[in-house]
Image (cartoon, rainbow, N blue to C red):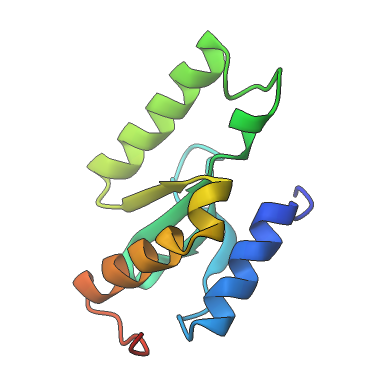
Length: 115
């Protein structure tokens, strides 16, 4: 299990402050693979992946092999019925991430506090 990043802590705080349902963290979504979502609402099949690696000069997510692995994970999530939101630092900080999460949860039938 990895430790919580600053971006994960920030998004977690924003989720609570905005009255959204509490997500599961590091949720393993695939029955055979060890893939995990940063945040997930399994009962609504909504997940969030924070794209923090884009800020690093060298990251496992911005190499050809890393991008290929991320494509495989993302495609498996889609074909198994998940809505996966990919968000960046700026989108967390400017409120876009919270708006997308709220809208995705509502679309999937979740009861969510109004804006």
